[in-house]
Image 1 (tube, rainbow, N blue to C red):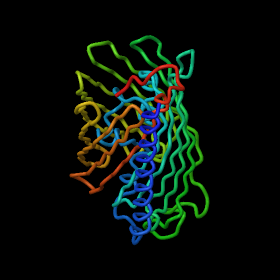
Image 2: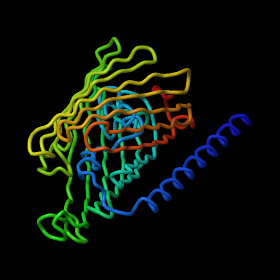
Image 3: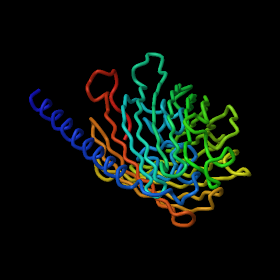
Length: 334
């Protein structure tokens, strides 16, 4: 018992140190970077209202078929039921060129319900280009998932979004090119649906629809997509394709490829590629993860190599609540 107490005290100390370091870095960045409007198109820095964890960013978005835990809450709700976990996470996104920062929290519980229903709840706050478009968004979402069998999983989620844009547009302060001063330009509810099939042999197939209420706005774009993933031993690879029906003046596609490799018992390395038909860009991503029984940490960075140059840095810290022994089943994910 003394060993366990010391171990958890050590974990809490490391977690606190990491949180303080992240907070310090965020404060320094937010107080120094604000100097002039971003030269990037707002759509690039906004990233289609996709909330990414460190794992999703490291795989460049290709996580719809193989994702789980809190990543599933933000990308494919069906995957919350594919593993037995109770996780609580905090996430941070920084886009230096876009002058954007996002802070979020999320939790997924798939072990507490006797009916095998998995549930998730998340909230994210974003500030983008305060000296330009001056966009502020709050995203509150929830989701549920259920295993129809040991191979087929379904999920549904909803999201409330409040967004304001107080900056001047290219024509200066005007109704034609800028937002509504001190007023929200978007107050909307949207819903998502997901379906995941795991037929065996390490394969996973997923179909996902986001913002299916058909809101005709790039702030909450209607997207339809899916992914095919394969896991063999400690290696996983996935290819995703997403159609965006709203953001641009035509339907556009985003093609993504991501992989991850478990090294030993705790470390994970990840990488990915994405082609964005709307922004006409190619990007590459890399990331690292550390997984312990009590917690995990994921870091991902994406860089647009061709197109409007932008970098995204994403960090996620996840606490495994089931490790406390208060939940009925152990963690079944890596």
